[in-house]
Image 1 (cartoon, rainbow, N blue to C red):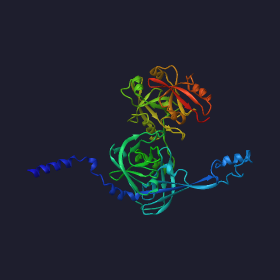
Image 2 (cartoon, rainbow, N blue to C red; image 1 turned 45 degrees about the vertical axis):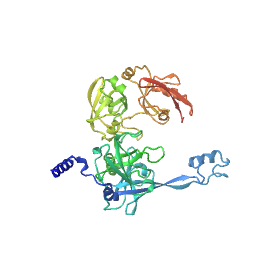
Image 3 (cartoon, rainbow, N blue to C red; image 1 turned 180 degrees about the vertical axis):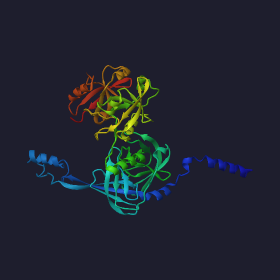
Image 4 (cartoon, rainbow, N blue to C red; image 1 turned 135 degrees about the horizontal axis):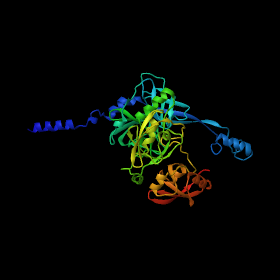
Length: 465
């Protein structure tokens, strides 16, 4: 009787094992099978510097002093001054992984940026000089190629099937220590980072340090699900939060780089902001969601499609836009020239629109915030529309579409409304330009800011002219 009970318990346990766990491998087995496809990348960049270094180590600065202060002690050519410019090699370390047996390797764009020489070292100690096929700074993905054949290649997985809490492992070269293995779990998915518009990062607690950049993130099936790219740190080393580029995003970029070396991205032509709880309530939305259009660029695909300021984009190409940060990467990853259906919330009702995407024109623009310009202090601003003024119960002010540089350091946020600069009422973007033009570099301006239901003064120190 006892034996039958034990058999029944064993059968219950067997059928209770979740489907995702059937293919889970031991980390040691994962490393043994996939480790040979992970490579160490070392780079060399030649930098011109004066023999004595600063303050005259810039060639233009040296020329300036030669022409205007030829006899100044300590200037170039004078006693105590630096010698002639020299090329000094600077070296960097990173990681990568082989994606095809004929020598194509994925890594981070920042690992190979500006490198004069890229050397790849395999686990069997062979070294190769690599060619940079192409790189994309927006996604931080680069493709390099070595002249070799019959190489071990990684197995690619599906990052969309990753679950928060799932175990993952990284192999790379932290601090130059080749083929180091670390493990952890997925902390979050679809994470947006400041200044990153095109990557829905995988957040993990896998220990990642300088030199790990460009290495693979594996699931426990032994499949690559991401490229380790960034850490959040106050010390320069690992502090429990790291981010990886999903491999499907990276491979889409890699295909375009291999085929032509150029990345083509969709362009909508709007400035957007987050939908807060207060804004959702004022617009009659059931909950905070979507991307609020605060500005439509003249002549853009968005204008031609009939998008208006105060529209809330709820869906793009049939996919829900939960946060405003979702829209830039959706637009950016779509092909220019394609017709995309949009679901828009307008004046309390759902509207169905259709837009033919253009091609993102300039390198310094973003898919969801196209056509914006950064004003003095690091702010991108847009005029308040009539609906927004009514919703916020304001008769003046300008909306912060983005805050960078001085403004970001001061604590100004996207969605804030600038009401005044040094007690000068701000009715338009032009009024802001005029008021800020009177602030000397190195001085601070007192900005009266509407945030939520309250107002506060924020000192904005201007670091540049």
